[in-house]
Length: 148
Image (cartoon, rainbow, N blue to C red; front, side, top):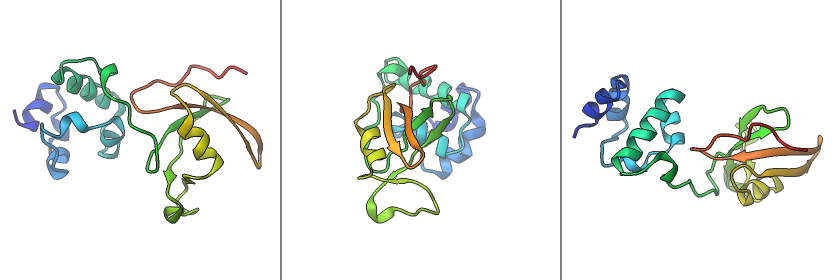
C-alpha cells in the first residue's frame, strides 16, 4: 500500500506531499506519535483520525499505542490550575537556551514532570509561589479540572 493511497482512504490526501517530503511511508506509520504528526502540521482532528487508522493497521485500539517514554527531548503537555494548557520542553543542560524556552532535565520542574504519571498533579515551588500542574502526554486527554 502506498502512503498516498492510505491518506486518500482517510480523505486526508492533503498531507500526501508532506508525508512524501518527510520520507514517511507505510513502514514508518506505526512509529508516528501525535507529536510527530503535529510537527508535520497535521491538524488536531486529522491527527486523531490518523492515529486511530494506524492503530487499526496494527490490529488494536488507539489506547494500545505505547506511551512515549518521558526524558530529555520530551515535550509534556501540562495544564495549570485555571485549565490553561501549555507545553514544557525538557532539554539537556548543554541545550538550554532561555530565549527559546525549555527547562533543564535536571531542574526541579523537569524532575517532577518526568516522575509524574498521566493525570498526576505536580506541585512545585517557583519564584511565583506554589504552582500545581496536571501532567498529560500525547494520546491522552487532560484531566477536566485540578482538585485542590
